Length: 280
Image 1 (tube, helix red, strand yellow):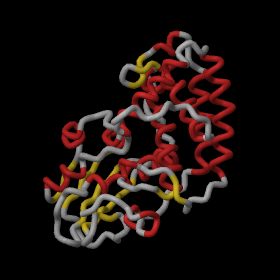
Image 2: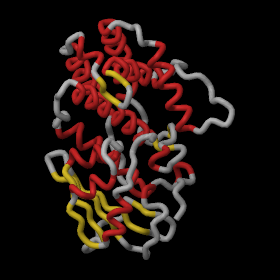
Image 3: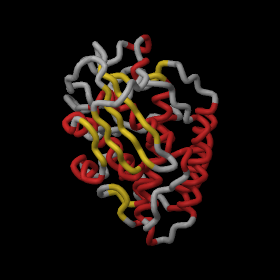
């Protein structure tokens, strides 16, 4: 099964569009509220890998500027892969802003974040946009590109919350949009998994922000566009916290499987649990 879309003319396999446009404003307000409540020492706490809370906040600012059209990345090095380029330039931006005060970061985030929220409010969801590599689509429809951007903002805010011993924000609307977007990686995840046409694999997230996503094997690819038809060949049932952490590789697939209820074909279920919904 081919993992790639042939442009925007054949993307129905991604499933129904996700509209995250109205969520950027509330997400920004939540982020600013969290940052303004931090102590001086909180800013140096580890939040993501080797990054501190300060680093994650600086990285978010770079994301905002980049989406607003500012050139915040250097060009590709010779032979550099996309993943390596992203990680290198992210680190360069963070290091460039290492001496920014928390107050200046908060002010810059507030200004740029408000501009970005307004920018997305009126975006055309059906336009061609940046590719989403983890979903296997290039170019991507704007709805997926925008929703992917929202998941990054939300994920980084959770990293900051966790760094200061706060749980994942349970607000269900944003959380559900994040999961719904992350699960658009399921067809791409299963692209090398052979199964008879019509075979269905389900991922079920339990909780107020949860849902059910069904990937169906078609003649050409796995698709999220087909209606569920009877009992799936495999189903993986996870709580929402485990699922989002799995999609962002905050936990290993084996750990996620150990927490899951697996029904039906275990190999298909294990294949679904290899999902990655970030550049990794």
